[in-house]
Length: 251
Image 1 (tube, helix red, strand yellow):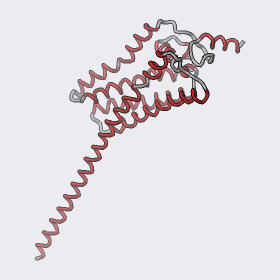
Image 2 (spheres, rainbow, N blue to C red):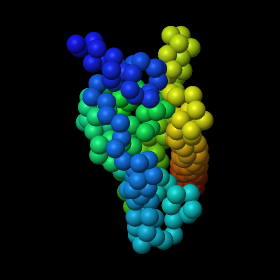
Image 3 (cartoon, rainbow, N blue to C red):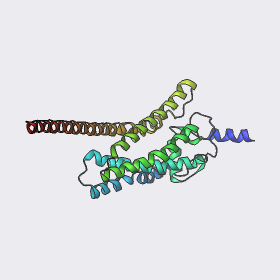
């Protein structure tokens, strides 16, 4: 009976690889537009809040810095809330009908690992919730407060995002190349829009902000070196002047 039930579950879902067992699976009860519209509205809510807040607290911010405030505010919400929902509910996610659950099931058409409690996905998403979410929020506040920790933290999280995306893609592509297992449906919407397109910003934006932080860090070290050189030259000059003055006194 257990095997037959597992087969029934596997045969009724649209996920790849075909026939994979997805426990508790229940198709979304809400039409896709009615899932996407409120989901996108909730997901993007941090952006206008962060933008308005940045205008009020620090109106002198440049365009890229203001964009970074919005980006990291969005990231903090996405990591802690949406991805946190997955980590908390991964074992039964396939059968849930909440807004976030239905959004996850739609995205899982591009990567079924989210519905099978794949160990890699659970671990990497848990680390994202615990580490990258709080750091994203910290960078947001660091930019608004002008903290010196802004660029060190921004460097860390940008490298972390790039590394996470690299692992995400490489593990999936390695399974496809080495084992022949494909987790994404082949249609353009699911592979190119969901799987590639939705993750592309987590490569492009971190690269831009990484370069910004590297340049800022480089300028800071250059300024420090110039200051130390100037102070050393001044100290040497004063020492020379003192020696000359002492020589005159001895005459």
